[in-house]
Amino acid sequence: MERYGKVLLIAIPFFISLIIVEKIYGMWKGEDKTPIMDMVSSLMSGLTNAVKDVLGLSIALLSYSWMVSHWAIIRPEPSWWMYVVAFVVLDFQGYWVHRWAHEINFFWNKHLIHHSSEEFNLPCALRQSISSFVNLFTFFLLPAALLGIPALVIATIAPLHLFAQFWYHTRHIGRMGIWENIIVTPSHHRVHHAINPEYMDKNYSQVFIIWDKLFGTFQEELPDKPPVYGITRPASTWNPIKINFQHFWLMLRDALYARDWKDKFRIWWKPTGWRPADVAERFPVKKIEDVYHFAKYNPPSSPALRAWAVIHLAILMTISAHFFGHIAEIGSPGIFLYGFFLFASVNSMAELADRNPHALIYDLGRVGLGLGILWVQNDWFGLNALMPFGSLLMAGYLVFSLLMTVYFGHFDATGDQGKIPSRQSADA
Image: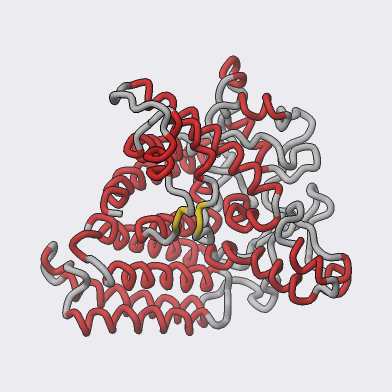
């Protein structure tokens, strides 16, 4: 956990810098593809995913270390070729895990968040899951285990492989010539994120495009079919925590209401989006039928609210940097309390952005938790040792942010707030 936290302290500023560059470039070109609230939602999702990973809130039923120790055919000395093999095997595993996440109802729940943005930009790359608590697919790393690739090599390559998938989430890079035949490019991945019938369930590869071409899932971007982004059962919320569990709750409800007992069990393993016929008839869920004509989710927000969303997110990112950088010093159970506070902060921010009339209630809970921590610890997880008056500064932030929620929830003019878009369950 501590090592991963240190990595995030380097990676997050790098990602945010590129996001800012993309935003400025788009504005300069008159082709801004990064709406503020969509960007904030994506970054909040990335924050929750990072917190969840740092806390280690997932388990592997079959660990890679166990596979190496029990099944390795050879025990080679450490060498550069191990890192190459590890990268290729991780990419092969990534293709199949990604593909199954799209093709099987149960696994779609953990991946839906990544596709939930109705835009395609660098921030949406950070929309990652917090709803997956069990890793079922370690067995795809069997080739590396048989070759005796140490677990440390896999652990070193895995973050690099993940970070290599960030750059191609953009509409500002066109086709890339010969590279289109070798690696996943922005053009390939625009197809993957599109909900056009021609593009659905294509281009699962993560770094090397060869896997799609080998297994028959490749699709080029067509000049006469501009990609339309999102999910066909729209999330209709900026709240990444809600999005992470929408599909699961839809499946659970469908399983409970299904009259046929077979449907109660097979719904989890059916193709993504499948619902029992009787349930679909009694409980219809909004679905986009014409991908070229639908209203994107855009609840009313004033320029001041958008500015506050960015400022508040920047403050939370700064607080999270303290969290990531001092995991060992904070220790358990403090890190879990800290993590819960960050989750509560993201939730209350998102509810305010969604124009939820109950946003103030969520924020009162968050601020009460924060002030309670300050009262009990007479500090904020060791912050006073890093800066004078650290706990006082934290208390001031909590009170000020609560006042902002009161203002934007009850006094800010944002247009017709009585017509807030309805929240529908999300699906493929």
